[in-house]
Each structure stands twice: as C-alpha cells, then as structure tokens.
Image 1 (cartoon, helix red, strand yellow):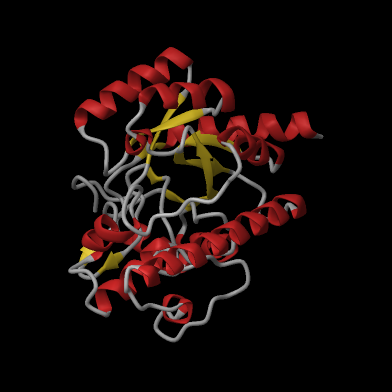
Image 2 (spheres, helix red, strand yellow):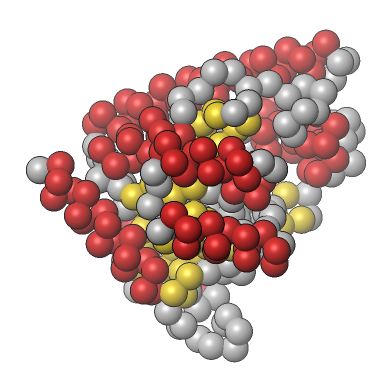
Length: 294
C-alpha cells in the first residue's frame, strides 16, 4: 500500500541489490515493490547489471513493469558524481566490458581505503568486507563502502553505519579515497551507446550547484533525479526549476539499499516515486536512441 492506494501507477527508479551494495537480492526487491503496490521499479546497481535478469524475471511473475538500469560512478570537479542509466541493454557486450573496467577501479579504491584504515590502526581485511553472510560474490557483482561500514560497526570501530561514514568513509573523512574515474559525459555516452537514457543522480549530495550546471551542460543527460531521500523540499524545488531551465525530465527514487545495522539506507523502497507518464517518456527516449544507433 502507498498513500492508501493499492497498485497505483507509481515507480521507484533507484534501488540497489546484493549485486552491488544492497542488502536484498534483486528478486526480493521486486517482491517488496509488489507488496507495496508499486506499478514498476528500476534496478540501478553500482557499475553492474548483474542483477537485472533476475529482477526482470521476478517482475514478470509479479506483474510489475521493470526498467533495466545502472548507476555509474564518475568524477568531476573534485567530487564523485553518479549517473543513472535507464533502459540500458544488459546484454550489450561493449557496455559490459566498460562496466567491468569500472569495477576494477572500484577494487583499486577499496584496496586504497583499506590501506588508509590500516594506517589509522583500523584492522579490517578485504576478505571480511567481501564476506556477506557466507555468500560469495557472483560474477559481475561489486563491493562498496557500505560493506566496509558493516565490518567497521561489527568490529567496534564505529557506532553505526552513519558513524562509519562520518569517521572514515565519506568524502573528506579520514580514510576516503577516490581514484581517477571516467567523467559524467563519458558515462552518459556509454549509457546512450547501450541504448539507455542518462539521468543525473541526487544532485543535492554534491553540494555545488555550479558543478551540477557544468555536468548538465557537458554530459547532456535527459533528466535530473529531483526527489531523493537526501533532498529536502527546498532542494526539490531548486532542481525542478533547474530541470525546467535545461528542458530535462524529473525523476525520483528511494536509493533503497535495504536495512543495515537496524536502519534503512537511504530511503524506504517506494517512498520516492514517479508516475507512469514519466517512465513512458524515458522509455520513448530510449527507443529513439536505439533507432539512431541502428
């Protein structure tokens, strides 16, 4: 149930599964979305589409519309910038190779962070970070900072997930590292070349609207994620106006990662949604892009 309406035509367009740094499998996410009355969802794992086929199959069983997606990690203006890709082709060989390269960068970053943690007297290992309840990493899956935060809390180096990020893992924290990455423009091009539609994720997290404008001008995404758990009402209003100024679509998503240390991270699945019309516009843009590639 959402706002008292069952099976309302609402979509949550941002969530993460165990294929990256979420706590639920992609099939579990789809079932949860169905229980909450959503019409459809997008799976947007970090730098991987490993969970897309499972989610699509489960969505077919549940009668939900499914949007294959991804969230690509980039770097611009000294900050980590994330670009969402909707309706990408999860079987596109070149796209899969490119994503594998991004996961290699992520692995190097993980090694650098663990090295800085050791310098700080924090003893956690990559093996502990990769151990997710005894479930080994499947091909194409990735490990991220939330996995490190879990270990930091479990071993008593942090009180909870937020404390782990504030002390060690967030941008500017003691063990934060960000190696060279591709630019938002490159990510947007990769998404378009894989038949998808690029959207700038959670601009409010970057703390620099001039940088956001630069990214919009250079990467030329089709939309901006306006509604997000880390955006307040003023942020939403500001980014709606920015979307109108640049002629862009507005999207929304919970950025649901599941429950860690007893807390939902970032938002609750289904809490930030768009209507079917917005998804149809994204779908049509993707189809137009595919025709141009043919």
